[in-house]
Image 1 (cartoon, rainbow, N blue to C red):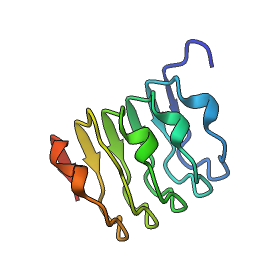
Image 2: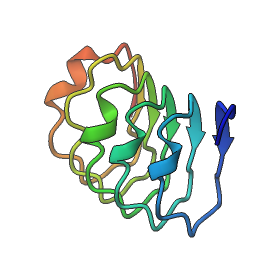
Image 3: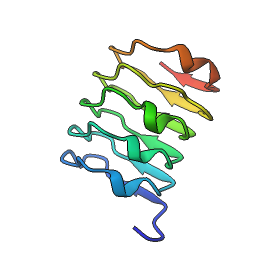
Image 4: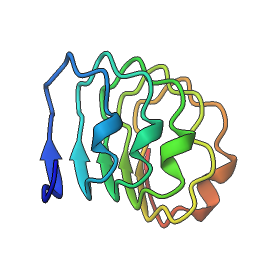
Length: 110
């Protein structure tokens, strides 16, 4: 994607492979219903995965993201180690079980 730093793919419901998007600074994948693997997005600083209903685990990409929004990721069970997370949105993530890493987050939306 060359010089592109921000990309909005909200409502692109058929996106499945995001491996080429890890070099972006800001990425919106809201309503990516088919997304199951976001491990390649660890380099993204601001990431919106709201309504990505197939996501179960974001631990691989959550370590380096500064701002992460996961609203209504209804299958999400683990966010893993949050490293340098400044802002995290977890509202309506009804299956989230492991919240042990939330102590490092500055701003948390539930």
